[in-house]
Structures are given as structure tokens and as C-alpha cells.
Image (tube, rainbow, N blue to C red; front, top):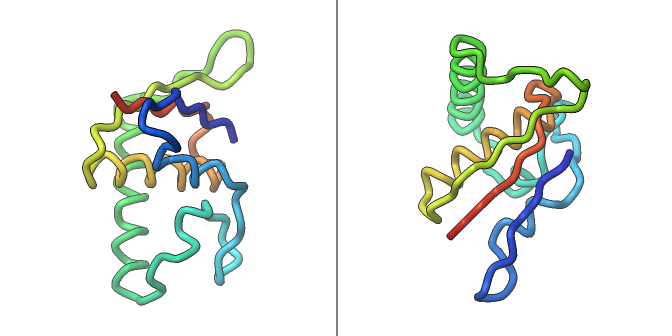
Length: 111
């Protein structure tokens, strides 16, 4: 996994914790360390699975992952506003990447 962060003037960036390597969760299902402290309840898992499924379907439907001619993974710049919806999107993308369902390099940018 490659996640690049741009320097931030105010010190360590909130996304620095996302650079940790992936670890398996309790179900032996690959998942990013971002979800290490996530709730383990049935409702949360159902919501997470539904969001991951819908995100994957949108990526497939709109052809958002286009392989490069040189064989390297494409690079995506993900703009984050700092709100919970942008961090939620980044969490979904990282989760898909940890499961090898999103073969891209992510570049997170927060202005």
C-alpha cells in the first residue's frame, strides 16, 4: 500500500495514523488498521459492508480504475476537507485497498 501525505503546517497530520500496515480483524478478513478500534457490533459491520459494497459497485459501474499501460497502479489524489464525510470516504478507499479490491496508490491532500 502506498499512501502519500503532503506536509501540513500545523504539525503531524491526522492521517499519519493511517500509514500503519494492515492487520487482519477478528474474522480473518483483511482490513486496515484504521478499523482496529472500530465497534464490533453487528449493526456497524452491516453498515461498513454495505458502504464498501456500494463504493465498489460505483467504482465498477463508472470505470474509475483504469490500468496504466506501464503496469504500475494508477495514482489517485483524494482531496480531504477535514469533515467526517471526507474521512469516511478515505476510510472506505483504504479498506478496499487493504482487501486488494482497489489497485491504486492513494495520495491524500488536505489544504
